[in-house]
Figure 1 (cartoon, one colour):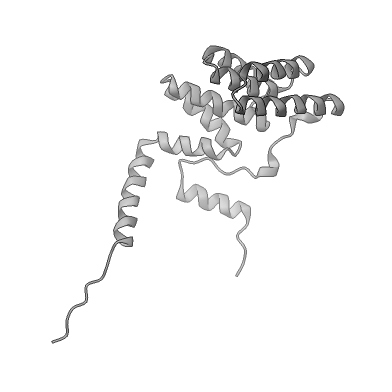
Figure 2 (figure 1 turned 180 degrees about the vertical axis):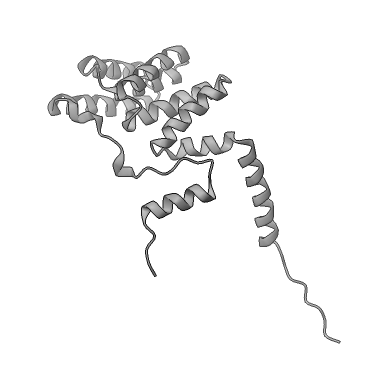
Length: 186
């Protein structure tokens, strides 16, 4: 049996799910960090990793200090702004989070992992604020970068896809629950 190429898989995906963007291979994502000094980058990544751990422990003030330091050290790196935005959002500072996300998206050029994650995060905030079209635009851009969550959000926001999925679920449920009746022989 012949293996299906990635290109053929993308075409098939486009035919079966026309509302979804074409998949982007994982290794195509750009690494925007190559522009930074390796030692500074390593130091900043450690700051951000520790900041994320602190945020997970709900130590937001301490996490914020580490993200501030990371941004001060490499102010042109999008990741620090994306991470700090997450903490600001968790602390209830939505406008501050949006400012950091806008900066992260601008610095990333809407590329790379930091750009992808910032677009998803901004899309979620916009969705919660009722800004459906702006949220959809952010999810679309993130989906084009290969983000699976963003792809799900696009499908979920499409009323025709939702209706189609609902009908398909009913059909599959009926098929799964079907038990043939045995007719007695006389």
